[in-house]
Image 1 (cartoon, helix red, strand yellow):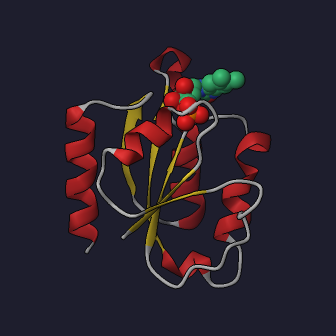
Image 2: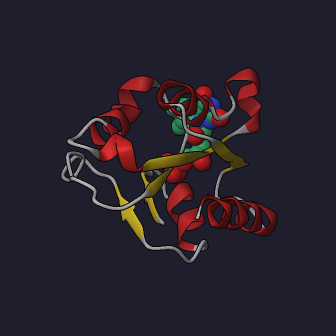
Length: 121
Ligand SMILES: Cc1cc2nc3c(=O)[nH]c(=O)nc-3n(C[C@H](O)[C@H](O)[C@H](O)COP(=O)(O)O)c2cc1C
């Protein structure tokens, strides 16, 4: 399983680098990259204009068919808005919301997401 992520201030990058899966960082330069293997997305939480790159990517070519789940980083101080980017993607594309974590996550967050990804196969 490939882990596709975006990161503006580096928290999500630190998190995914601890997972031990193959990763691909989404940037403006590769947002329309075609995928030919299953992937999950790990995303921080920001306003939609900031995370549009994710929908560009998912809707490129057949990518949607390979999109298997989503996890999200955020900040609990945002209350009800905690992790809404990942929640919205899960709803919009009908994929499982695998896990939500704060900032770069902790050991337990890593363990939970690894298990969830293993379950996905
Ligand atoms: C302008 C701004 C808006 C944010 N809005 C939210 C939010 O609505 N909900 C949330 O859970 N976290 C929010 N966050 C927190 C980030 O999602 C969190 O710090 C994340 O770990 C950043 O990941 P990154 O360093 O990979 O970009 C916001 C952060 C900033 C700077």
